[in-house]
Amino acid sequence: MSNYWLFKSEPFKWSWDQQKAKGDAGEEWDGIRNYQARNNMREMKLGDKAFFYHSNEGLEIVGIAEICKEIHPDSTTDDPRWECVDIKAVCDMPTPVTLKDVKANEKLSDMALVTSMRLSVQPVTKDEWLEVCRMGGLDKPPL
DNA sequence: GCCAACGTTGGC
DNA sequence: GCCAACGTTGGC
Image 1 (cartoon, rainbow, N blue to C red):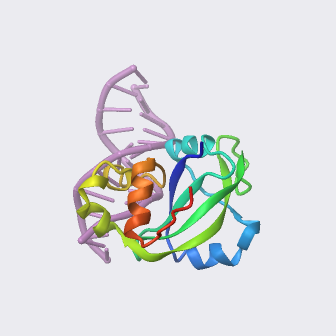
Image 2 (image 1 turned 60 degrees about the vertical axis):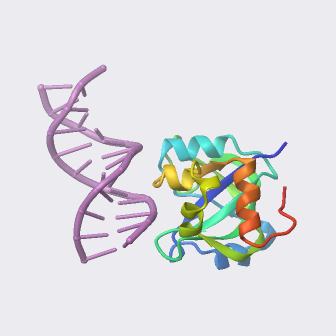
Image 3 (image 1 turned 135 degrees about the vertical axis):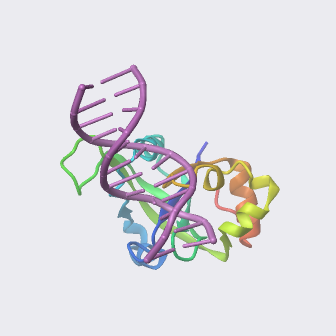
């Protein structure tokens, strides 16, 4: 059974468009220097799905990505503590789901996006996954 | 650009 | 091992 996640990115550093341009090759999700975020990445399995969220600007879930390489050393540092996964774009959210939308939805009140504001790599429950996909206009959510 | 929240570091 | 200082994240 696959699990669900959410990756935050500041679009002026690494945007959904840039991620999509990488296609199936995917891209290393490097630069994470937070233990909780790294620990979440350690749990990820090939094929797990994840929301791609634009922080700072946009403040919305813009697309769905998939883990295409499991945990490995972060190539941007020699510090062995920091590891990461690779992800590739799967599809756009037909309608981006904004942070405002998430906060306004009672079903999503426990979502880490709301409760752990600063965590940049978060777990998403299956219920949350389905609800956000529904809000985003995805009739057939990737599972 | 501000600043609150919160994670990390380092002195003791 | 506590906790103050400091740095970073991210919403507003």
